[in-house]
Image 1: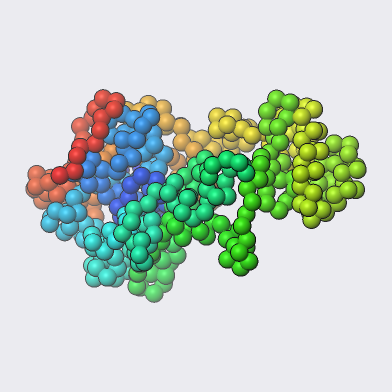
Image 2: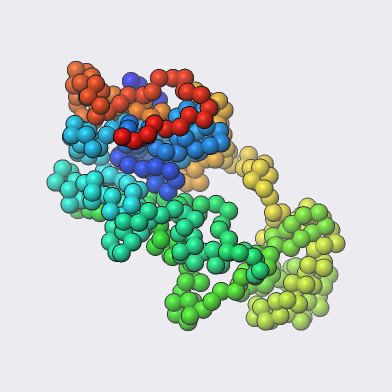
Length: 422
């Protein structure tokens, strides 16, 4: 089977190979960052469970393909392998000998149970990095608990910080804990591989979504830990200490403005032709101490004109500001076209898929978007190329159920559910 992925010879991570036991969002998003930089990411998908569960996430899902899965798994390979099968475990260890990283996003007790830690795999490949991204880490009283982004947002205090003062606790609009956890995993893998190549010894990376979320409280977390600070939720997404740094309603919509420097405030009062505001509230502290008055004055001004007019005037003055876009409007911004952010490709069953390209831009190293793999698409290729198995051995393993090749195409009808685990 020929490799359908783009030529990665000059990509920054062309010499990095990762074996990933991953599903849904956080784990696949982490390895996606490395795949987009040229790493060979091999997804290990359990044939008994239909592979990565995100293959079946609606909407825009057909058979074992979904646009949700595409968005997290482009530029990867797939081997359909049963790690609990004796032959499957032997195959897995043969693959471990040829990779730099074994990555998983399971519960914290999962890597030890499945033999995915360095204590086990270091005997197979002393240079291998074993990276685990779990809800709570591989130690502590919560290690065996599962976790999802929304739950962690509540547990880590995020929901208490989000929304208006009279609204219920609110999650962020995106699964930011999962996505940040992916970035944390990507950085950790690169750091650990660098050390392994320098010192000749691998090791474990023990990462958690909970700690990732706590770390992202940054200054608010430090204020709380140091001084017992309790953040007050403010209307209109206002910043806790800088005024104005929030949204305002205009005559026809919404505007977001960020006067994060004193010079921006002075430019703003000039645009508004309200020098009195600059005189009454010249400093950050003055505006914070009189937040309600300042906001009321500004709201009255912004209500006098349309969003587009305000944005044009503010940008001309060099003040950070924007209309509050929906996602479609954001993707239509001229900057998106100028930077070729969107990459379009044709998928065998899903038709046209327009990917949001990687923000990781390294000169001469951008890997074009390639579709996500079909489950087991690369099974036979990997068994031959990495494990060195001949055709007879591959056929025996396929017949025995340790591995599976790709499902017959075209895919099944819309709405198919994954096969139940045995």
